[in-house]
Length: 328
Image (cartoon, rainbow, N blue to C red):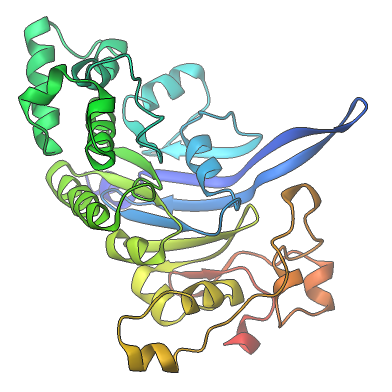
């Protein structure tokens, strides 16, 4: 029991996901969407994964679930490495995903009952029709929907209600682990708070573990125990949520956090905004050495020559930067 509690639920080791892109006559080039990412998530924990659009956050989540076959690297679930098709099939009974867009992720031809019941049918989790109906109503209750909604179609609901349907579907297999892929970014701000609070309540009630992908740092701070920052397919910083906000160590993390709105006008005026120069490079033509060096004011020749190691600089605080000591 103690061994199970001590070991991480999810371990990702040097995960890479490359896509071959056609660049001309019979020529292709690898787009390094995820390039050597390693982290672990403990049972009952929420790991927030942040970074600007195109940095590879969603690809990390989908590759962990083997919606994309990893180019290389390892994914471990509850102390067991996922290798065979049977391992992945078993893993998918315990790991699901809540998608970003509640409009395109639900089949418009299916009723709410059929959408939520589909995972139950695929994995043969209900012995009878009555048991299936009871389970669907129980799941709808978990996310604040009532029995009258069961026979309606997705287009009859608001964005927030649709996302609740998507969450109920994710809960159908009674998972341990859920990848939340920007689940509130398409919703109104007032609805975002309701859905985030619901994620919190479900975690406490059902003992869930989350990988929470987002670009809104305020949302991530509210829900996450630890936060990982990605840039151009690589992880640049990982630490406790409070630690990342109070003492970011990587220049990119510092820039991201300087852009977070502060509700206090005096504090907002005192806040020094760190504006990055240039555009994010293409993953097809990533810079040599540190991927962030082309936009970093602290970059040196060493940054261009070699990739910085992702190492623990303080207890639980990991940074990939050659100049951590000088920057902080």
